[in-house]
Image 1 (cartoon, rainbow, N blue to C red):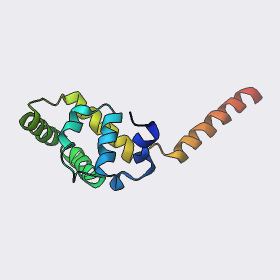
Image 2 (image 1 turned 180 degrees about the vertical axis):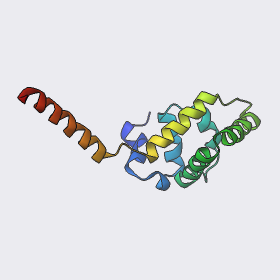
Image 3 (image 1 turned 30 degrees about the horizontal axis):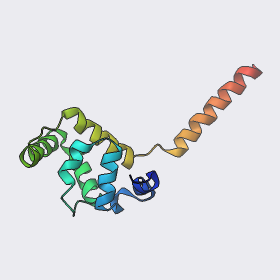
Length: 121
C-alpha cells in the first residue's frame, strides 16, 4: 500500500504538470475508478490532457459524456453512470478553481466585525 504522501504528491503541482501516474492517483483518491479505467493504459494521458478534457467537459457536457461513455463501453464493456461523470467534472472544477483565499479572509473579517458590533451595540 502506498503512503498518502506519495499518493497525494500531485497536490504539490499545477494540474497541467501532472504525470500519467498523478492523474491515475487523483482519480483513485476521488473514488472515480470507473473513469480511471479509461486512462490506465493511455500512458500519454497526463495533466495537460486532463486539462483539455476538462475544457471539453465545460464547453459541451453532454457530448463529452457520450464520448467517454461510448469509450468505456467499447473498451471495458461498462457504462459510465452520469452521476459519476458529474462527480468527475466537479472534482476537476475544484482542482482548477480552489477557494479564493482573499474572499475567505474577507468573509472571516466580516464575521468578526459582526460579532464585535453585536457586543458593542
